[in-house]
Image (cartoon, rainbow over all chains, first blue to last red; front, side):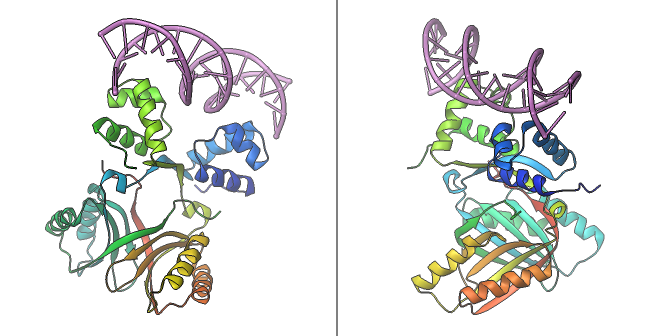
Length: 153
Length: 153
DNA sequence: GATGAAAGTGCATATGA
DNA sequence: TCATATGCACTTTCATC
């Protein structure tokens, strides 16, 4: 199910990451090819799931999302049932922008964006009422220094 | 410099976040308006910086980025000069997808995507040779449970 | 991989509510 | 300020060479 990716694909992906609003002609010119092959490759990459959602990045501050927390979670429960409930809870909460299961001491890390500290508390209370969690540390972001979705191809 | 955002703007942003590849007609239909006002609002939101980059999300695994680390950094240095050097180092390194300055005990958190553990070590050695860092903890992601750039509007 | 053509879309503008 | 309508240029998409 793996798509083989060559150098031209990488260039195309790089252009799309940089600006997905470009026309095919522009992309073709940038990568040194022409419309048809570029278009066929993009279609294949999409079908193969290499290219996922096309989206715009929205400024959180402008919309009143002033608070961003990284939440470190330790749990004592490791049964499949608990894990399924936890995953479902995370996926259902739109405040959770990212969630990773970790190796080591800390079990999970979440990135959570909310309007303010009170909204975080509402989120937190809701989460711990959904699933048993052993220990939680919240790291409050003071400043987003960098944010990109572009992989270094 | 703040753009006032009403309910229709929010709906438009929501649609664009969901799928930026939609036509104006589709968006207008979804939000219950018509092309002209939707177009004018999108333009204004773009000009006001509320709408930033238009991009595609690329599957990291498909491109061989198998390792994702969250890096917790403590530093003893807090002069402006050190901070400027640190920021510059982060911005210059494409492996660093996200970086936040934190409140409290831990000073910074980074999200770093690399091909493998060895590549992380190369990154780490490079970073600590660029700037003095007091203490580093790396959390290795085993599984990306959730990733979205969509704010819950 | 190139060419080209049909269908669809973006963008601007005019007009009335 | 918004809805509707129109028009041209550009783009996407796909069949054919």
